[in-house]
Amino acid sequence: MAMVEMGQPPLIERGYRNPTRPDLGLEVLAFVDLRHRLPGQEFTRVHRLDFHHLTLVHRGEGTGMVDFVDRPCRPGTLLHIRPGQVQRLPTTPDGDPADLDATIVLFTADFPPRLPATARVTDDPFGPATWQLDRDDHDRFQRALADLTTEYATPPDQEPEITKELLRHLLAGILLRVARLPAPDDGARAAVAGPEPYRLFRQELERSFAVLHQAHDYANRLGYSLKTVNRACRRATGHTAKQLVDARVTLEAKRLLAHTDLPVAAVSHRLGFSEPTNFGKFFARATGQTPGAFREDQS
Image (cartoon, rainbow, N blue to C red; front, side, top):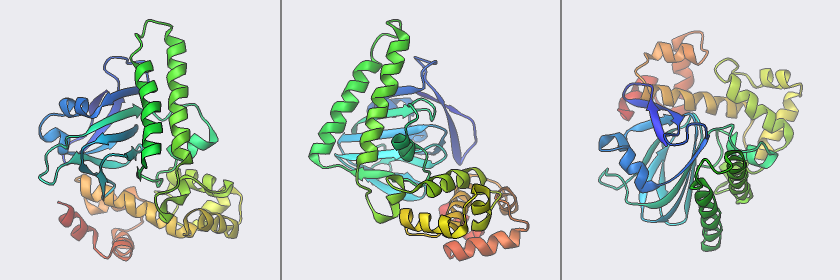
């Protein structure tokens, strides 16, 4: 899949475009193909995608980055990057592109069938980014991805609508397998569990975090009591609704400070703060650094 550059350094915004099948919201390729597609320093740049990037590593090692967290990749690693997240593709300790044997699936948010279990995987912006599969799980995923790869290689002029539906449902099967995986840590429980109030809260949070900063506003908008929303959030994540709101605002602030040239005042305004000083106090409480110091460290 080709990716269209829409922004300027230091962050590259990449939108989905399939170069060989432009009408299809999915592409399957090998890691080596992606290395060839992004030559030189292009590969090691930080990207922000508007589509899903699912990778299964078969051989080799490297370290990627997803939203400021390093993600070691080795045989059996399953890596899932969601739309809106910032990432750096896996590299060696020297900063060169990693030499991985891996299968990559790129797909738009609307391509897989809408199923409750798959939505838990695709829709939660704080869902797990990596799993380390045991041999049996790796073999199961490898077989499922091989089926998807084979079907993707079907000539597009052979029953194109049937091929598209097969690809959609094969992808759904893979996402259902992801949904069944145990969460890699307690902080990621939300991706595989969570009552209905929590699911609705996370959807509304993703839509409104730059406008609503108070938990009771989300509860009122959803028609639940704050106690109900907090109980659902604690059950799913171990955190209150307010803590999750603050975490989402902080994450977006980090993205904007580290990977755009927006002035701090503009970042503050974009995130819904009435005054830059209020944003500065909020960010310092959340991270222990001023916005300027954080940006300097990242640069």
